[in-house]
Image 1 (tube, one colour):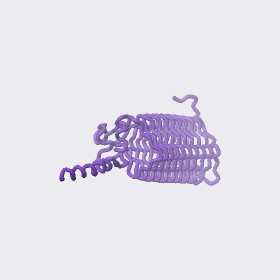
Image 2 (cartoon, one colour; image 1 turned 135 degrees about the vertical axis):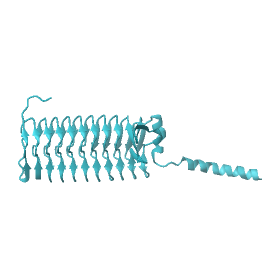
Image 3 (tube, one colour; image 1 turned 180 degrees about the vertical axis):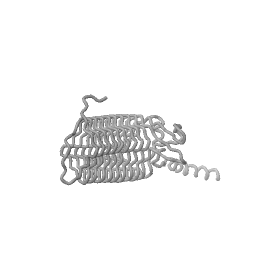
Image 4 (cartoon, helix red, strand yellow; image 1 turned 60 degrees about the vertical axis):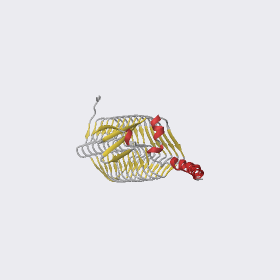
Length: 307
């Protein structure tokens, strides 16, 4: 009789145990098998209610003291997904920093990030495309390295965004993005063309200490608060055609080696060009009605050939 009862309990409980064992949270473990095999991670119209992270501490290799890096060999594709909690591609754990290297293309299409997003320190070895994405938490892209082309097309950032100390090796395009809070690109290096046309910067914006090795375009961009370009280096064409600066704009100690265009640029408040150097001669500067233009110690040079 006892053996029959035991057999019955095993028949009932075994399927239940199997069901419970199959339930996994939407964290790094959800994608670990695909990543381990180098298979693409593809998701469409999914909702993730827990923090999403690709970081696997056990797979991370030491780079320096307290710095570890994991290589992701899988292509990453998310379309029309909702990330209700944070999205982490960077982690600080017990004073150790964990970063990711993505060797394959990364695509986020029409996704919603409802809380903080952290890609700090990531290396992207292939193309990266964020298009029509909504970031409602803070977005951290500090100290990232972008080897191939980068697109942030028509994206909305509700809270502060940080790209400072990042390296863009190929073309980068932020066309029609909207930054609703603080935005910082301080000390970034742009090796090829950088496109910021038709972008709206609603709060304090910082492009100081940047290096633009190729063309940079802010045509039809709108800056609504204090904006900095101080100590930046423009090695090629720089365009601000039909750009609007509602508050103070500083270009102190900038160096312009290529053609600079301020056609129909709207200036308000104060525009400070102090100690800037224009190596292609004096550009056609706008004559604002409602702004003070400071040109103390500005130099206009005309050099035939620059190395």
